[in-house]
Length: 481
Image (cartoon, rainbow, N blue to C red):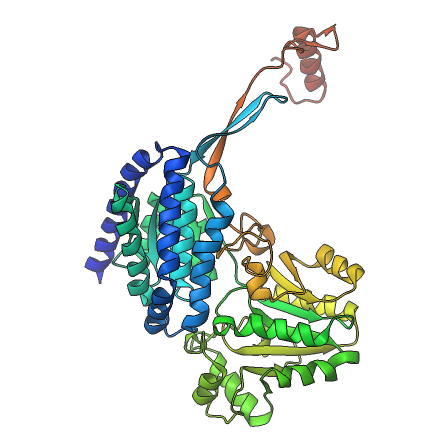
């Protein structure tokens, strides 16, 4: 075991060293040349979207390939469409009025931590945004997804070689250990961390600048003014997408007493099954792993697979298992994040009670991430936007798809910032703009001299004497100074 740890540490050092050398050459390319590289990779990845999706499901057992294909296309085609015209090399802006030029400076070598739930799509996305900003990148794959991530990196290598770019610019650790990942984070210039809370915390504690995300325990509120049929269809589309593996997928549905019967009817029509009695207890028993956290065996599973694992019977065609939860926190498993085909359900008297409950749910493991609301009342929507501790409020759209930029105009991203309240450094959908620094070239203003303001001469020495005397009176300066 010790030999493996040492090997992984040495590999991380070697890969960063090679990536740094390749990045120095890559950063000398013009904007046009870098854009050609980005376009070529995006095009090939779009063509390989289905194959990589199938490989990811085969290796990890999470989700379904049809939806993973759509995530791969989001990370390639849609992302490229959004970023291809951005200026990221050299002088990116000249403000003649303010006499300030802005120059893009690459971060250097990016350490990219990749989760098992979205392995190929996250790899594609992080490669494209890193290279677009002139960086090199080294991937640290989740141990259960090394094959599909490795295949994705191998395809990128083929494209780079065809364009006479060093393949060392993009690489992946092949001996995944905690020690190796820790060393990679220390050696890199910037960390892109997508994964569980412990991993993200390690990234921020590494001493290297990091962009990480927090967990998502996303509540969705169906308010009484909403088009209920449309709202339920959107909730189902979001929660069932890739069997709930997206961190922004809906986790708990909150609705008002006055419309609860209609909402339940719509959910049943869309393929929901409400758990009760012994069936509910069996599923609850399945949800928690040996360490008290979410059981990894249930992640990314269909409703039928979960029913089989729990040993319960459900109607044919069931798409989602729903449970009417009675509280939030310890002892109420459906109030936590569930990256699978499970949904909590809550009924409240009115929207004010929903407002309080959604905040409780977010504090229960989802602070700073996302929330969805289905409503046609702009005042209520605005209230939630002003009060909920989230970085993105999704309105009348599937939460999982809206947050990552599929059904909204948010930047396409698979790393969603949660802001300081969620332990993250940004509330943005992380993208290209976060992966280069801006060097400001500021010209002096001819109309103002250093010691003259409004034609009044400033006596610097006199001001200094006055300040010194005041400090002495306040005992901030020794009397014999």
